[in-house]
Length: 555
RNA sequence: UGGGGGAUCGUCUAACGGCAGGACGGAGGACUCUGACUCCUCUAGUCUAGGUUCGAAUCCUAGUCCCCCAGCCA
View 1 (tube, rainbow, N blue to C red):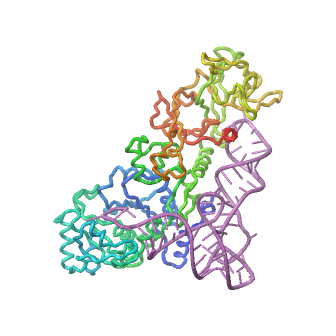
View 2: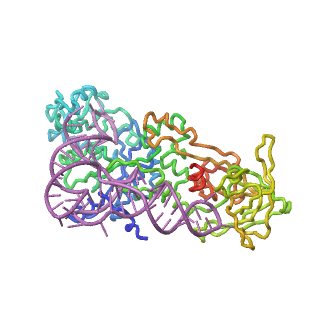
View 3: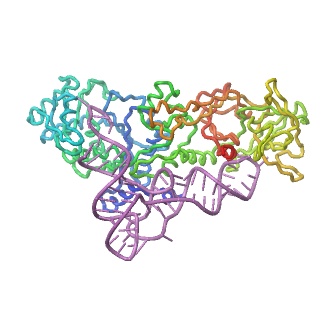
């Protein structure tokens, strides 16, 4: 299949096409630059797919660069999870793994160069004072009293900053640009600050750390990035990105291009808020299957292919938008439908005794593993006198439109026989505890020689010859399309996790391993959870099948 | 109220002066040993008002609404 034929165009591709046509670049180099201060989420996947995808399609390369300039917030735990997630998504940075912290020495030299040009100065205003001097959105700022120090003095002071002679917060290095710029970003931005904090990679070597604006453009330039793709909120910073490169780096310069980050309905991407959910125990961890993190989606049973397909379909533009969660589910179902082997599982078992089936007899019936993939073959499923069906598949007094089992009614058991419900056994509380039925031996395999039809086919498992399992049913973590409408903690869905303790699955599931994915026929796609053991099988519902009966009932 | 962006079916996204198209969702139908899948049909849109033009989503003018920026975060 020709991937390019289905890859939608977007404004970034248009820019690249033009740059290439004009000979501005011979090839393209992009980068994915996460800060290692949290786990990657589906929003990052959009950026990863974009940057790595562009590099692939244009025969260029994409770097993985950790933007690790703030040791207070960063940790190696995150570096490892990020690399794992990018790889899992299906992308390969080859040899091009970089860390902004590897450039600290060069960055320092660039800062010195800026000072020598008279374009940076050491400022001794406090953080509060800097804020006051900055002015407001509508009023210009005013010059720092330290703005006109001599180059020599700045050089000496900056070196002393580096040597640890000053306390945190007492001195910063600022770019000397324009305190009355209508763009607040350009009002002598801080480019170096003192942090007497060890860095997870450079240890105690530095006590001054460069700021994002100074680091990012130069890191891009050092690596020869041609197109530096970031999100919309950095649009205000672009003049600074260009200003810094203009002063100290030879052309050509990388070009910053901004696009709208992904928003998904009923979920949110704020790292801070996701961290809060983890820390307050609302979810079990960064990889809780309800989390929009890649680790969470992976544990939930999402496939990399589905996420990549999703990222392609949502497109790339500059307008803020909220993508409907149903599109993600669609991509997931489409992939799983083609790849997940089928099996039968009964979530809420209702025993059926087939009275005319010989006691003690076991038959092994052939079942198709995947009707969409003949290569998946078949398996044998044990059938016996006592079976379980889904409670929802039986109704005492069925309404119009209900095709499944009811007293006196005949249905098909998938891959097995037609059965007819002959009697209902009630418990002390009047609830249905068991059904009695008869089967038609002539219908083995699922069709009747006399050509009679049934309206429904039910999934089932043999009572004895099946395995108990725990099944975790997930729903949206939030009840509102926009969880941030009001306080997100008050929009939590109290029913986002339902644990079914006594489900039954086919005997064939004995050998499954965490991560294995299946379609439980008529129910949905499920995967084996990390908590699963051979003695205690645990499945996560990844996503349900579309259910037109459920939809009808809602009306 | 300064500056920077943005506005196309319910949602996401194409069309770069020349038939407003696709996908998701929704509705209806066909098929069916999964009420799944698949297939078919339908649904529904250019923020507003002017202007330029044979012709405007696209160009111009004036509005409206939304987002971002006043961290020693990224």
